[in-house]
Image 1 (spheres, helix red, strand yellow):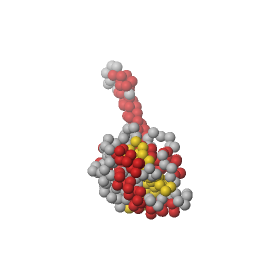
Image 2 (tube, rainbow, N blue to C red):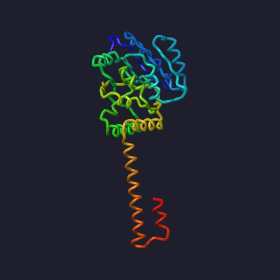
Image 3 (tube, rainbow, N blue to C red):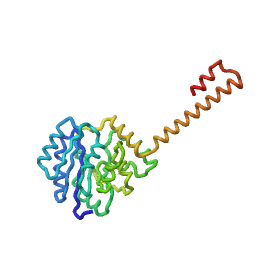
Length: 270
């Protein structure tokens, strides 16, 4: 890695008009001694987020790249889009709500480069999730760790090597969950814990249906547990059908207690 690595910061945006300026200004102040770029991906927001991105691009043309998606794809695919547009040696992903304390980035980058990590997660001391999100998160972590003890340790505040990013963006799958793709390409997973700040958004932009869909996609990628479950259910149903068929055959031919035609219908259905 270069002695003076270029930094790429990827920020997926959705309904971020009230907070993105503050986040970008703090980033620029923090990274002023680095060569850096900030990639803003507007996930087809319905407010004035894109107008804010255009203003920031015009004000900081040497640092800001803006991308507007044609429809709302979700945070994971928006982040993936940003990763595919990076040119830095170190890639950082953060949220758009100002909760990630980016003023710690110089020391985090130093830790990352000194140890030559593949991925360094910056995790909060405490997650302030809703009850519904906590339940889905705990289910996901429990099931995914069945096969991989490193699963479920992620955060959207990440520092990644360019080598790892290049592997992720070439992954041949339409199901995109960044933390699970990371597990495909490295086991060198490190983390550091720092206090997060309150979100500048009034409420989360994740709906219950989107959280459920993300959890489902994550499980499909991270574990074979769903396949094992389906196979087990299929085996149980087939076994019960076979036993039931044998029961009616014995009832007819041994005990002669079946109505005429009833046994053949039941066995053919089973």
